[in-house]
Length: 202
Image 1 (tube, one colour):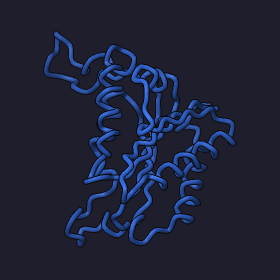
Image 2 (cartoon, helix red, strand yellow):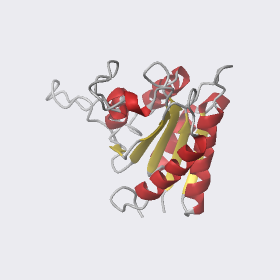
Image 3 (spheres, helix red, strand yellow):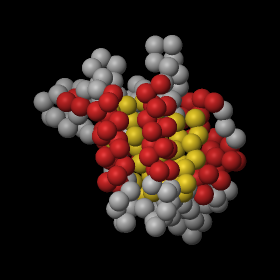
């Protein structure tokens, strides 16, 4: 079984208090615990200890990042969390510098991560409909995928040497929500991901 860290990166607003992302994170925690995994859940908006979060990253075999996509990226408190936690972990716990050496100062930038063998999964919610993505006829994203949009988050994880698991997304959650279906899809997604021996250590 695996050690799993779930990070709820929601920034609550009056018009969007974050109940959906909190529920998705709690649902994942419950489902994975029932499968025998050991799960820790950090809700960033409730506060956190930076060094404890670094240690949770070291402890985890899998990290699930749950957040709403705000203005094409992570909520600002999740970016603040990454700034603080990832920077503190550059002492060798999460990365040993940026991968370059004095002997080769121009090579291997971004390859200093020390979380080799750790997997991560993005679980995100959108106001945008699913049809806005992966379609070159749609003028805004112009054929880009969810993972294309969230490439900076993927690169942050790669900087720490984490390996990507398939992402999950719930779409159109404000104007045309299908919440019950989204929970069922997430359960099925977790079943698939955590059934793959190549993804999750036994």
